[in-house]
Image (cartoon, rainbow, N blue to C red; front, side, top):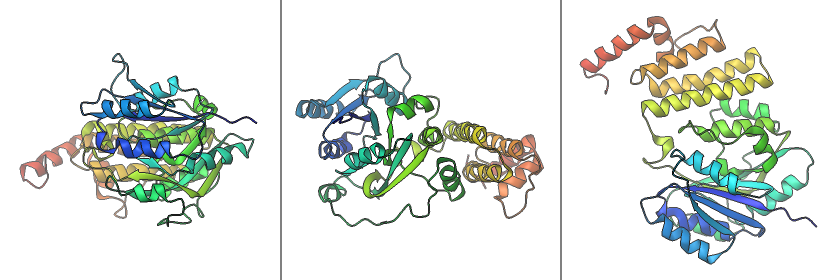
Length: 335
């Protein structure tokens, strides 16, 4: 009987306080035919010492430092880990998150049970502090906060993506479990994005899958991001990356299917972006407004939409900047 190898791929940068919990969740897996490849992005804390400790514990754990000739970033480390891996199936896992002990075993069975190119998605829960998730990891019958998360979710990839956009929902990247072949078809993580890079990558993976399998009985544990997390960055560059990730996603979705309804759902992502960028990051707000006009040249702005959407469209970019500077001068807006 063929027992497929699973590659657990972990990027790390300065997560020494979380690493042991994450790696213990890997070592506790009931499925044993795995390799765990960890790529450290030249951490400045004591991450490397912990990684050496765990490499010494189990020969299936293999640690590497990201080549210095490659740019910095988690996605680059993930891609390098994939290049080093040999598994038929892939489990992505960040170095501050965790997975329940049955996750890989159950999701291997999910994918072996179908002949189509499929993606399995586990249930998931938030957690906060180191140690909080320990009891859940050690208890195969813990009580989840959400027992039937997926019952209303579409089971085909395109409609699932649109459902997530429409309802402003997301799925953590380590909930997904996928074949190596789907990744080779979809392409690796974008190394030019530092915000929403997981959403852009998983969108491509889903569009390459012929079936989505939801598994409510197993769990990924997602640590609530603190102020140092990339998802919490509020800079011009981070918002530009968010914008670029949305455009890349739009293009892939519209290649599969293009309709007025789909475009109206895609517009919602830019409305949400504008709520964050507003007058503080007018360049990104204007880019979002222009992209909305590309998606729907006949779009009408009204007061039911975020204020900045119709205001920016009415004023134009130069006047938009003047208004921003005026508000800053009056101390009504933070610089």
